[in-house]
Amino acid sequence: MRLVILEDYDQASEWAAKYICNRIIQFKPNQGRYFTLGLPTGSTPLGCYRKLIEYHKNGDLSFKYVKTFNMDEYVGLPRNHPESYHSYMWNNFFKHIDIDPNNAHILDGNAPDLQAECDAFEKKIEEAGGIDLFVGGIGPDGHIAFNEPGSSLSSRTRLKTLAMDTILANAKYFDGDLSKVPTMALTVGVGTVMDAREVMILITGAHKAFALYKAIEEGVNHMWTVSAFQQHPRTIFVCDEDATLELRVKTVKYFKGLMHVHNKLVDPLYSMKEN
Image 1: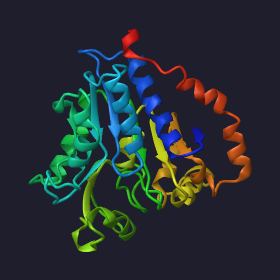
Image 2: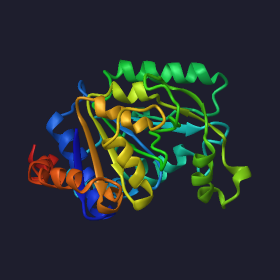
Image 3: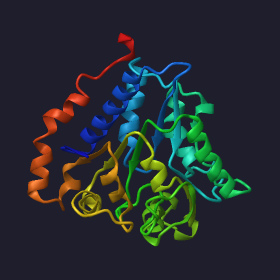
Image 4: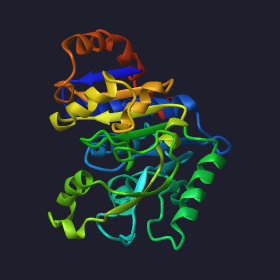
């Protein structure tokens, strides 16, 4: 497990974007070999998406041979609602890059049979050859995607009832009106993400510090679902200084001492212009 500690949100976002960029380019995707990327929503990945859009517009990165699978979607929210994750992904990322819309997979929270929708999503991931890199964020209670506290650590894509903490956190996107916030969602399972060949979790801000402590320094616990990734062979946690406030000084010092190694993963930044 790697813990990459950057000074602030912007630097953490840029490091994550550089890592994604380099992984795609090193993979050498083509018509017969797509790179498969798992993607999150929320406020944390926005900076990362902005940098990826910048690399694309500069001609350094193409998503032509990339397939994406999003982590989750609200149930019952119209697809064109401004707060649906379909809207989020298209407005903040997909419409600014060259991805084929048929290769951008997002769960349908309005499907007539929600379990069949979840099963089909798992099948699509399998047919794509599995996920090469799953990028995620976490909630202050340590949930990954909508795998709320108490979720099975071997869970698959399914329907979940949202915890009150999650509903309260998401109320800011619905004019602060709790009655407008969806109470259910479709989400990939912890096991779904664990199956990815590589996982990168973005954690920024002091309000996520206790969750990072639970993820890194304590044992695997279904009440803090992000802690499951201690057992993944290739996990990178990317965080800012504020997110480390609950970690032991010794832990922070240890991982900062490895930054010269971690930075080789993103420096140099590769470009498709050179290929």
